[in-house]
Image 1 (cartoon, one colour):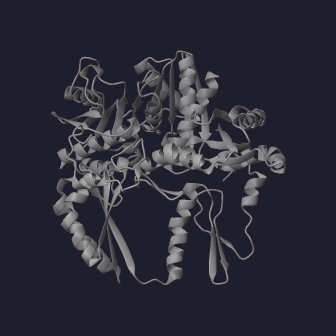
Image 2: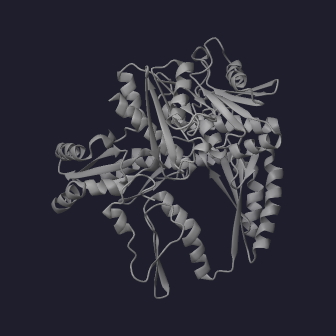
Image 3: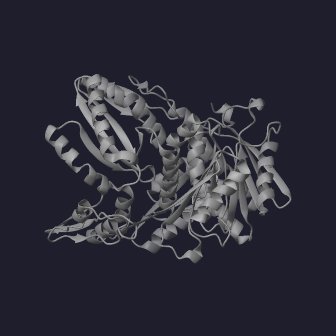
Length: 295
Length: 295
């Protein structure tokens, strides 16, 4: 491992490989630092590295399953997350108020809201039952009910993100995508290329300081999308841009532009947050707009 | 606030504005949810929103300073972080072993290593003294000593990141920068545009699926850098690319290419991690290479 990376194994690395008597290493180590499983009588001490990524991997794949197995617990708890964009957390709570009151009386399933910033707002349904099938049944029924109440703002479930949802839709339609990025400065591309590293659907992007002066209003977003469209020749091109300084639009105004084939679509949104959060909100707003147009 | 964003203030939002008798709101609220300062006798209860960003802002700017003031503590603890790239955490510990042993005997300052993944490895010096000036004096002496031992791998101090360091160097030389991104797929651009939102130095990027087949070895990185260079006409262009599949290079191999004026520079590195971590390691390796060339 060290040799293949052209690095020297230091005494420190060697010391990390020591294992106390009676303990065993936790399998599936993502880094060089080991995790340890140390049974002491009928108790267990788990030791994990401090590096967050390594620690998390071991927690998820070894320690939590191991604890559950040791606990002998029979109750099954399963949850499902509906991911939404287009309403605030308090707005969602309002829409679902009656539903929540009813569930609170019954006790199961329970609902929780998780505002996840750049990933939208999550509504988590948690069901408790004696068997997995029964838990999934509760989840499915509640999901149907929630979708009726929430409508089009639900963009995905569980691990789906707005970028996987949009890329899946494009894949199903055999379409490709490019991005004109100025306000979002690479955030959109990095999110898309992270889930499509082979760049089968997401073909590329032009990152620049924005449309030329003189372009104003939603035409700015269309200009940026068309520019990427002409260079890459893909089926769909999208862009989120800030207003021209001459427009004196309020802070947080973002124009969205989407080109699908020969058709042009644009929208204007008002987003909160400092610049970095605004960039990510712009990305999710733009991708959500694209999702709706592709539906 | 709600009006300006075209949103409706819900009953929930209204309820959030209630303040219990005797409590006062924490100033500087980043969102709509308030924080509360509630003195009870000679104790205080602080209430903060669950949204991590809002909670952190209030902790840092109100609660921690308030706690320190209330504690009447006289000892001053100050720390400084040296940020490095180019050696492993255990390698650094080895280089600094003697220094750490000596400090452990004296008790101050103390050293800690923080592997921060995409931000490199941090060496934190912490000094305790009766007065701020004395603490800073200890930090300055230790920093000088560490820099002698660590040499060129120290790229920045405290809040400096590899991107702020590179952009500062370019600004000082009145130079501009573009990026050819394929492997890094927008990650480099989003990091650069995040610290240079006006795009005064970082002028843009071309994101694509990589150099054409036939280009192999370090020439691939030079090709990608030159492509961005020609389109944007900036002083400096950089690119980090994966090997062509035909090269059968080991996993984690990354080629770095940099063009400064008419000169071309290239390098090859072996990086660990899954694809997303590898992309960020490629960004820091490329920017660190650029930093050294600009020094």
